[in-house]
Amino acid sequence: MSAGERSDARDSDRDLLAHRCPEGHLAYPGHTVCSECGEEQSETVDLSGRTAEVLTWTESVASPSGVRAPNTLAIVEFTVDGSSVRALGQTTEPVAIGETVEPVPVEQLRDPEESLRSVASQSWDGYRFAPV
Ligand SMILES: [Zn+2]
Image 1 (cartoon, rainbow, N blue to C red):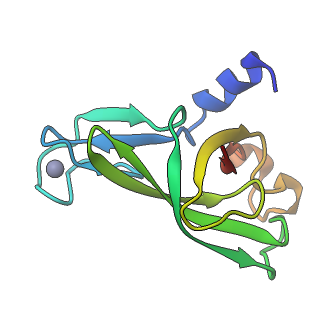
Image 2 (cartoon, rainbow, N blue to C red):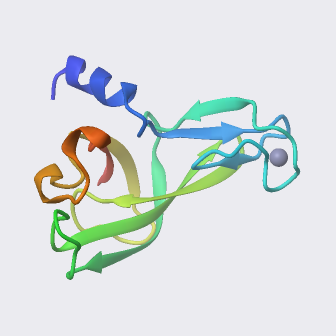
């Protein structure tokens, strides 16, 4: 994938941005108010250039229309400045608990032609987690 394509992916609403409050608590997806301390989450932290640890994973073999099958999903944990934040996402290949992964941009997480929504109604790109 070229640098230009990566830049397109980062312009979408599926950026891998965690939100951070003044106390350093992280949330992904972000919220306006921190769920831990109630402060406003005024900062964003880009997780896309960081690595994470696989906490658990599952494989779905009965995927919805337009979603690959089998579909491996993992809950991963990023650690940023001593605070951790978890994210759920597809993986590029089977992973193991404790494995280190990194987000890689993909143009389509699902097949837009198989969706009930119109193709132009949303972005289809995003990130999958790949073993480092
Ligand atoms: Zn907080």
